[in-house]
Amino acid sequence: MNRLTRIGVAVAAALATAGVFAPAASAAGAPAARPVFVQTDNPAGNQIVAYHRAGDGTLAQAAVYATGGRGGVLQGAVADHTASQGALTYDAAHRLLYAVNAGSDSVSVFSVQGETLTLHQIVASGGVFPVSVAVNGDRVYVLNALGGGSVQGYRLVHGHLMTQAGWNRGLGLDPNATPQFTHTPGQIGFLADGSQLVVTTKANGSSIAVFGIDRSGAPSQSPVVTTVPGAVPFGFVPDGRHGLFLTEVGTNSLATYRIGADGKAVREASADTGQAAVCWAVRVGDVIYTSNAGSSTLTGIRTADHGRHLTVLGNTATDPGTVDAAASPDGHLYVQTGVKGILDEFTVNHDGSLTMIGSQTVPGGAGGEGIAAL
Image (tube, rainbow, N blue to C red; front, side, top):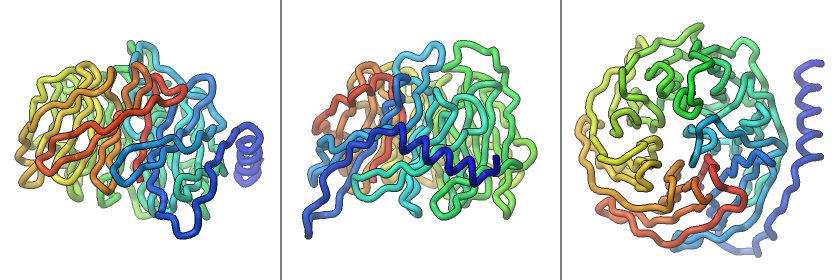
């Protein structure tokens, strides 16, 4: 079966199995929809819940979309089934949403029109237990967490992912390390200029692995690995063209790293949050907010001088099990909390403090990870 036939089969399967409950069309002249999308990662059937965002930032459930795949749960996980950042990724340039189906070893591709999602492809992840997606232009990479870890690359052609057989790389991690949720890779992401692809390994190596990306979009044959003993690197957001703000679970801190042209990562600064299980990071202007699952808090950290100076602003309580988060363009922060599957809503104040404005119970969302705010 050739690639085009496989894509056709995948689309047919998606349309046959994915129940889509679409919202009513907007009235003529109505304001453009400002949605927030949340992934349930439910093993009984993965879904994306769409929320309408009002002008004051509060949310109202608008629709529920099946991905056509299943969620999965890493051994040992409590509040976070995939123990990863980037499980739901929005591609603004192409208005596409990518969702990992960890229990089905697949990725679902939705087109986005306001609050409405249309599922038009399900593609194999090229490995076992996909947990994170990275996008740069027409290049898309998926991180698989089990079987020693791997990355699979795709080229985006007319809104569809075309698997590139030569863009699959193993990470060589210990496949038997336990518990899985602390000993699997945490995130895949491009540097801001798209020249390098970064993977964090958490406790399975406690390292930052960097693949060079050539002009065709292919990764280097093997990554340059920087080991940071005891740090347990997890989630990150870009800092300029060649930097990262990176959470370190082992030290419960946020650190700034520069990635050299040779792929080596150099730590430049760090800030101790004083919280437990500091795993996820989201950026709002010059402030990074870390999600601290063990403390059920968010920590705000102001950055200056290209990340060389980090100042802890304070902590804000959330519902139990703080996990993945996303910021909207109009100054609101939305945070998944995995113990009860509650989505917390905050306004970001000028001084970096957060004001809680509401919460939503995500249907079937306990343990879910993956969120995008448009």
